Image (cartoon, rainbow, N blue to C red):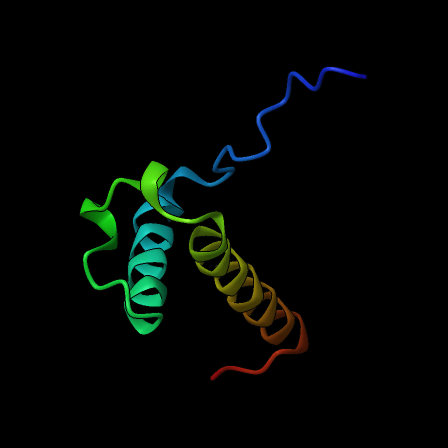
Length: 73
């Protein structure tokens, strides 16, 4: 097994940290986890945490595609 020393969760644009955190909280709220930022993530089922991350990724890809296509929403 190869050990990967790169942290793939590193935010490449530090200025985006606040917007990413806000997006995470909004998505969690839409999924019925209104107090997500104060929850103990270690006690949440991986499915719930995965939904939040999955929806974030979906939204970020959509935003990038719109940006590349020159459209806004």
